Length: 287
Image 1: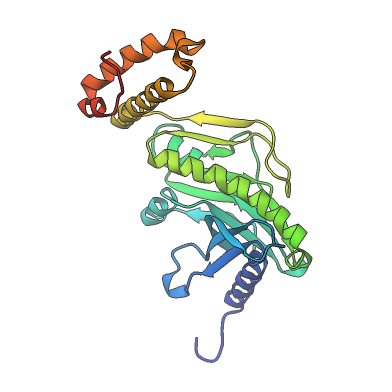
Image 2: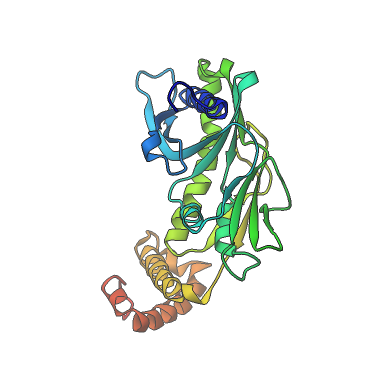
């Protein structure tokens, strides 16, 4: 507005600037211009390798939404739901703590559990809320009576403070933490778009510590997935057959593969009827 700016807008601007400043220690960060803002504030590429080296290399990419409070991020309108349900990059929520010159970082990996599972397994949710700081049993999705879903993001995956951004040991440790979370999210996103409908995520974690320990897995299925499942089964079986037949030392004649080769061959003979194109890639099936 001419001659002034709303106080709430200015506080939000300062939060974004703080998030950008803290991100710069761990990632190559590009701000999304306001004219192009569709729900993401920054596009980032994690800095990999030792900061002591003369060359800093870009690593995994992710997007960031900056917030100034832990209030839920709500997606309710049809176009909002379509957007949040079809992310192609890992999305991190960064909540600025202005008084401490710090921020808390939250992963949204379990968003896909809500998206693929749907509301009570019956239909897409009418509203999705990303809720930083809230926790429930794994994987952290709450179906509400009104047809909405709360994706409970749990505790922060890391906290970044002002005194860490110029400490190379600290930034390398933070980058390692984020790298593990981004990798999980990336794998889940890629699997989903490839028609492999399962989501893997940590059963437990500590803020600021690299992921360790067991992961849980949720598997989702729907009759609409039939064609993609058929295609994936044929391709995976073909790859396994070909690998076993080219490995040195006649691996296919040893256990446990020896017992599995005949049924694998039967499967491929059947799959070839469903997808004749597989015949161009299967080695030695008719020998």
